[in-house]
Amino acid sequence: GGEAHPAAGQPLLRIEGVAKTFGTFRAVDGVSLDIKAGEFFALLGPSGCGKTTLLRMLAGFEAPDEGRILLGDKDIAQALPHERPINMMFQSYALFPHLSVRDNIAFGLKRAGMARADIATRVAEMVALVKLEGLEKRKPDQLSGGQRQRVALARALARRPQLLLLDEPLAALDKKLRESTQAELMDLQRRLGMTFIIVTHDQEEAMTMASRIGVMNAGRLDQVATPRELYEAPRSRWIAEFVGDINLFDGEFKLRDGHRLVIATDGAGTLVAAEPREPVGATKLSVAVRPEKVKLSRRAPVGEGSAINQLDGVIADICYLGGSTTYKVKLGTGGMVQSSVTNSARLDVDAYSLNQQVVAWFSPDDCMVLDR
Ligand code: ATP
Image 1 (cartoon, helix red, strand yellow):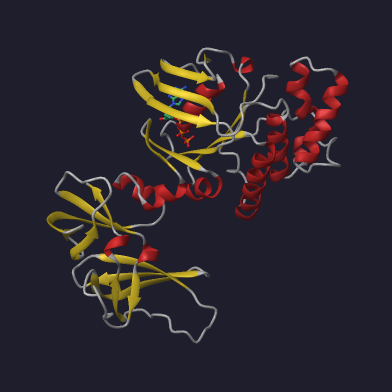
Image 2: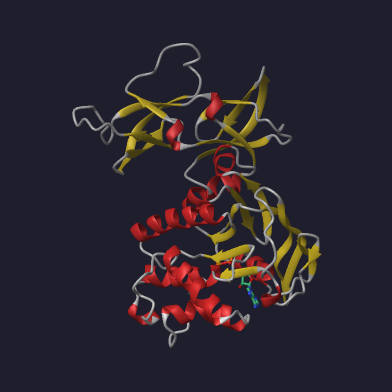
């Protein structure tokens, strides 16, 4: 598309009540979402939640049964893929095996009727952009996984779409290459000032790359938030569990003490939590605490408010992860709590050992209260 791109921060895409049913199964169940120009947005969710189907509707490979997809003020929901200034990069890369790197990248430009000289310039630009210089004549089967991924990216970017959709673009890469490619993708997106929507089931990947994340579950968008909001203030128990590690204690509301809630839990006795910003209506609640907020001590810590949320237990499992160690503590009250402790570089600093008696404790401010 030769259309002008909206300036960063301007509304680009509006998805309104979009739904898609296969037979009797609602794969996408009424999704509404606004995307701004220049955003790096991630659609995150477990396998089968409808992420790819939503992306395919944005690209035009699938037509929604309900709802509107507005680009600017134009409803493109029924437009064909090539009529949209949107491009999609597939998980499989879908490169043409018989075409060279250069011809793969040039493919869409030729089909769009671009002049030969312009195509050559644009292809050279794209090859440089994704650092594939010297490999222009190779066929896909003569490339590494990471190089193929970059050819697919260059091809998807060649027509300078207003919006690039990426379906699990890094799934085929090993961990190290995936991490370096994440950084490259972010850098590329910033330099081009483009809008990216990436689909992933990997919450770390979404957190690392995206400025906003939409969590999808069973065809619905459950929460749209920045990575930090999602991690520190998940809207539901399900999201709290899906995004990062978490300790969950199911319990019942007992009383309110100023701005604190007292909750009787099954596994961890009585816990005190700061009142959440959105008031909780139910009495059946869960207290959620991230492992890095749970501290360990040999004996009960003293000091103001220290008697709150102190749990006696025994180290039941130790997982050394380099930068941190995760301890599982079996509590006297019956439950388990996980604590993630940052490691010091000094080997003489004590760590905890298996079966050691400890106190696990955390602040009410680090507790999230969630509806069950
Ligand atoms: P994954 O991460 O595994 O790719 P996803 O979140 O992208 O999952 P979708 O591919 O969007 O999920 O599929 C959502 C649901 O719709 C799945 O249960 C899938 O089986 C179903 N589905 C997708 N396409 C079709 C189709 N053409 N016909 C029937 N069912 C379909």
